Each structure stands twice: as C-alpha cells, then as structure tokens.
Length: 232
Image (cartoon, rainbow, N blue to C red; front, side, top):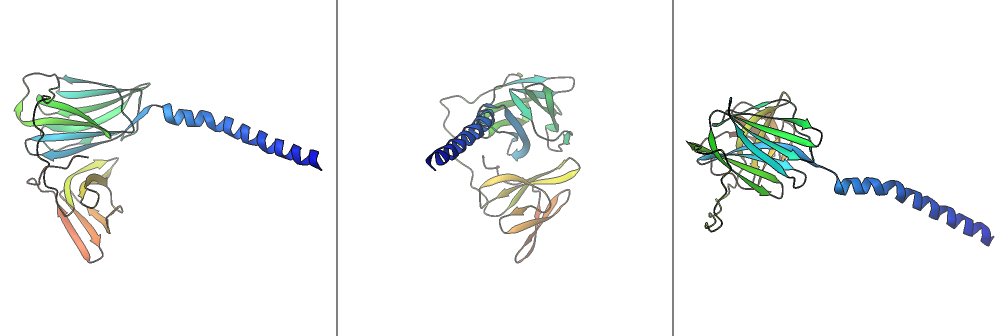
C-alpha cells in the first residue's frame, strides 16, 4: 500500500515540475519582453498642443524633426506597434495627422505630421511620453527643449467636475472621443457603447457627444475654450 502511495505522490510531483517547466519561459517572456506602443492621444492646452504616447513600459527612443513636409518622427527601440494601422487626421493646429507602424523588427515608429515647423518638448512619465508642441511661435531650432531644472513648477490647473470632450478622431473607420472623466480624473478614449461613470456613450458626432445617463441624455460639445487638460 505504501509503495503505491509513494508512487502516486512522485507522479504528482513530476507533473508539477513539468507544468512549471512549461510555464517558466512564458513568465520570463512576459517580464522581459518588448514594450508596446498602444495609443497616441491629442489634447489641447492653452498655447500648446500635446500628443500623449502610451507605452506598456519605458522604452528608449529617438526623436527627429524633419522637413519636406514637416514632421516629428519618433522611433522606439525594442517596442511593438499595437495602435491603429491607418493615419489619423487631426484638425488642431499645428498637427495635420498621426500615423505609425512597425518600422522594422523591434522598432515602433510614430510620425506626427505638422503644418509648419514648431518648437517642442518631450516629457516622460510612467505611462509613456508627453510631446508638447508650441502653437504660437515657430521653432528656431529642431532639437527638443527641456524645462530648466531650476524653474518653479507651475500650479496645477483646476479640474472640471463634469465630463468634458477634448477631441474627436476617427480610428479604423470608427469615431472615438477623448473625454475627461471627473470620477477618475483622467482623459480617456471612448467609442459608442462604452461607459463613463454611470453613463453610456450613445452618439459621437463631428463636434459633440451624447451620453445616456440614468436621468436622461446629456450633450457634450467640443469647446475650444476648455481649460488645460489634466496630466495623466
């Protein structure tokens, strides 16, 4: 009887070892695999336009401002491209469109097509990059300008207390709206059918969004005078 029990225990142990051997490469791959570029978001601010690039983890990158036509090209090393495969037209100056691709194996490329030469800065945060493009004055140089280390931090803008539409774009032939959700204090991308708080996105038009709420329908319009977008 004891030999049989010992044999059964040894069999279960061997099965566990085999299972762990199979799972170990997958876990290692997930922890040490490449980053992924999953989204690019355009947000208006006073005197500037921001492009938020979302990455699954920090990645090395190179940025270059090119002409003929003007465009800002960013290449991310050891990164997979997981965003839309079609150019996204933008009607907000100075950006004309956003597009990207898997430029080559291990390198994801994002291109910000511009209407003119502009000054820009690039800031890194835990969710990716924030590319700030000046709207008022042309750039005198193409290199990124970073804030001085001794500069005093700007006071945080007051956040709106109701949902606010920051932009509407077409992605893969479907309308998406970038809406500030006061419950999570973030701007996120929504499509028809998505929920925002206790409301559901019912309609996304060229310049407005309609939410279906428990108390009725609420229309949100794209407002050029909206306050600065909160940082992520």
